[in-house]
Amino acid sequence: MPKNISQFQELKRIAAEVMNERGLTPVFSAAALKQADAIQQASAEMGSTIRDLRSLLWSSIDNDDSRDLDQIEFAETLDDGSIKVLVSIADVDCLVKTGTPIDDHARMNTTSVYTVAQIFPMLPEKLSTNLTSFSEDQERLSMVMEMTVTPDGIVRQSDIYRARVVNRAKLAYRSVAAWLDGTGPVPARIASVAGLDAQIRLQDKVAQTLKEQRHRNGALNLESLEARAVFDGELLVDLQPNPKNRAQELIEDLMIAANGVAARFLESKGLPSLRRILRTPKRWDGIATLAKGFGDTLPPTPDASALDAFLSRRRLSDPQRFADLSLSVIKLLGSGEYVFERPGQTSEGHFGLAARDYTHSTAPNRRFPDVITQRLLKAALLNQPAPYSNVELQSLAEHCTEQEDNAAKVERQVKKSAAAMLLGSRVGQDFDAIVTGASDKGTWVRITGPMAEGRLVKDFQGLDIGNRIKVKLLHTDMERGFIDFARVN
Image (cartoon, rainbow, N blue to C red; front, side):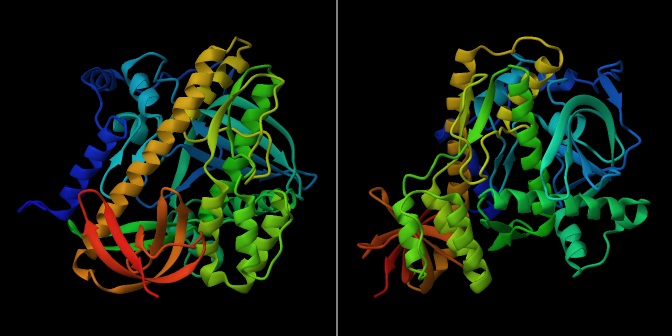
C-alpha cells in the first residue's frame, strides 16, 4: 500500500478499479450529473388517480446509516380480524424518465453496489437519498401495494395505486429489533410519535403470520451471514458477522408479500413482467448428502418442504452453527435470476420462497428491475400497453441478471481485499474453517475472526460444501483480494 494512503482510501481505490473490471460504471456521466442538478421536487400531482394518504402513520425501518429509503409501511386491523397492510414504494419514475442520462446509467449498472469502503449508487444521491427517498417528514409521491392478510397469513385481496405520503418516523433495524425482542428500550422516535409503538407491533404481527404461511407452503428458513467492516477512523480493524434480526425479517416479510402483489397485478392486467426466480436446484444430491452428514434424510428429488423441515430441525438442535449450514445450502441452491414472462405464461417460480408469482418492485432507488416493474405497473393503472417491448424485456432480464452477478463479485472481491489487509500479518497461523465452495473452479473456505473467505490451494481433494476443517494461512494479496489456505491434516 502506498505511503500516506489510508486503508479506507486504498479500499475505495480498489473498489473503483474492480467496478470497471466487472463492466460496472463507478461514476455518473457529465450528462447524468447535469440532469440531476436540474431536477426539482416532483410536482404535487393530485386527482382521481392519486390518493392523499399523508395522514396515515407511515414509518420506515432500515440500517442505521441508510438514507436511500425505498419503502414505508402502515397496517390496520379490520373488523373481521384481518389486517390491511400498505407498502408504499418510492416513485422513482416520476423524476427519472426512460432514455434520460440518469436512466441510461441505472440501466447500465442495474443496481447499487455496496462495498465495505464505498457505496456506488444506481441513482445520483440527490435522488436516491433525497428527492426519491422517504426522508422523514417530507411529502413524496409513491406506488402503494395494498393487501388484506387473514389471521392465518393468506393474502385475501390486494390492489395497487398511486398516492401522496409522508414518512412520520425513520427507524433503525437494530434498535427496533432489540425493542421487539424485549432486550432493549423503546426507540426514541417510536416513543415520541403517538400510536407508533402499537403500529410497529401490528406490522410485526402480520409479518410473522405471512412468514408462517410461506413456510407452510414450503419456503426455506435460511439465515445468511454477512460481514460488516469496522473502521477506527480510516483504519480497518475488523470484519464482524452481521446477522439478520427481527426488524429486518419484518421488512423482508412485508416486501416479499408486496412483490407477490405486484406480479399478480400485472398478470391480471394482461401485461408482461420481469419475474425473479430461483430454479429447482441442480445440486439436490449435494444438499441430500449434506443432510445425511447430520443423520437426516431428504427425498431423492427436490422437495422444498422436506428441505425446510430439515433446516428447522437443525436450527433447533444447533442454533450457533445454523448460519454456516444455511450458507452451505445457499451455495448449493444456486443464484436467483430475472426472467421475462408473457401474460398467461408460467415461469419456474422461486424455489426458496415457494412462490410462483414473484417480482422485484420494492427497491427502485437501488435496483433497476424495480424501476422497470414500476413503469409496467403505471401502464397497467392507465390501461396502456407496456412501455417496453417483449424483446427489450427479454434482453433486460438477461442483462440485469448478469450485472447483479457482477455487482456481487465486486462486493465479494473488495471484502476479500479488506480481509487480506487484516490477515497480512497472520500468515502461518491456523484457523477453523467451513468449506463454502467446491467445484472444478476451486475449493473455498470461510474463517471467522476476522470473517473472511479464501481459496484452499493445497490438500482440498475429497472436500465438499459444508465440511468443517482446520486450515493454515499461506499467502495474502490485498490488491487482488487473494487469500490462500492449506488444509491442516
